[in-house]
Length: 112
Length: 114
Image 1 (tube, rainbow over the protein chains, first blue to last red):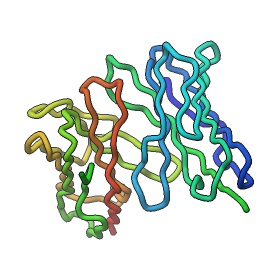
Image 2: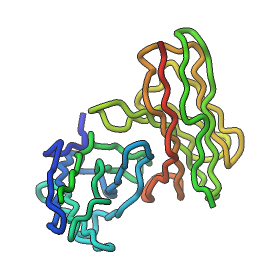
Image 3: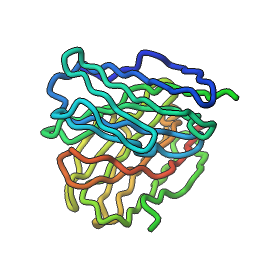
C-alpha cells in the first residue's frame, strides 16, 4: 500500500543552524499534510500544515515546502534551538478518507 | 482549556486482565481518535469516531473496543490484555470531521502488559 516515509531517522544540527527534515509520500490522492513535533514523554504537537493547492507555507521559524511533482514534503526550522530537539513526524490525509497516516518519525538532536 | 486529557498516564497489566483508557477533550471537536505508538513504527490508528454516536475501525483494531460516551469522551477498552498490546496510547481530536484539519493529541497512556 501507499505510505508516508522519512528519509533520515536521525538529524544532528548545531545550535543556530537551519534544520531541514524531509518526508516522501507516495499517495497521490493525499491533499493535506501536517508536521508534528513530539518531545520525550509527551504527545505529538501540531507545528504547521499545508494543503495540496499550496507549495509553501511559513510559520514562526518554520517553513513547510510541498513538491507534488516528486511527492516530497520538507520542514525547515530556522535558527535551531535546544528546545527544537524532538522527534518530528509528517502525516498525510485524504479528505475523503478523513484519517491521518503518519511516517515513522525522525529524531532531531541540537548540539551546542 | 486543557485540550485532550488522558487517564491514566501509566498502567501495568498482567496478561488476561482488562482495563479502560479514558480520554476527554474540551475543544468541542466532533472527531476523536485512538492511536498506538510503538518504536520505529510511527502512530497507528486503532479506532476513530467521526462524530458522536459513531465509531469505526482503524488500521489495528483487533483486541480493542471503544465507546463514544458523549461528544467530549472517547474510551478505549482492552478486554483481555496481551503482551503485544504493550505500547503508548494516544487519544486525539479534530474538527471538522472528514479530515482537512490537524489532530490535537493528549500526552498518552504508557501501558505495559506482562
